[in-house]
Image 1 (cartoon, rainbow, N blue to C red):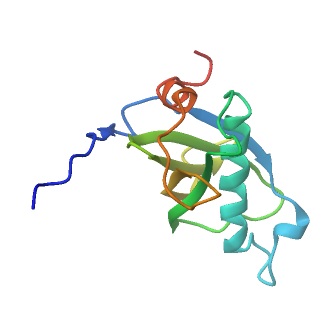
Image 2 (image 1 turned 180 degrees about the horizontal axis):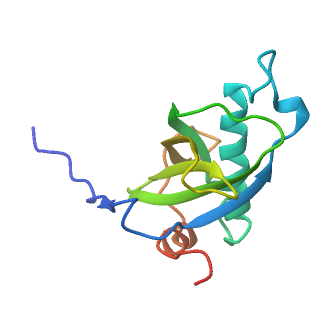
Length: 151
């Protein structure tokens, strides 16, 4: 059996580069749980919102034939977020594959970036919704993933 040929992934150090995008979000009262801090499930919502804010700057990132799905997520909860709070969600592209990208994230206090609430990464895969098969990343995503906010 011959080895499967794959395109090499592009790896980058998330700490070495400036963020790809920084989203600003405010904590809503409804995000709190019985312990008066943001419920852990809302962290995923914050990350989704940050990715969507970034994608609003990218043209043609999905179509009827190719759209992204969340394939994996890893979150390290570093400290609770209390209300009221203003947040910055920093996104960095740490890997570009053939059909997927890994986006590292940091959720920090908007006024004090050393106050880290959460970090980790997600893997997004572009797939054809009709057949569920992976599709190559759109060229616009490849370009946008290598640019930083403000470029």
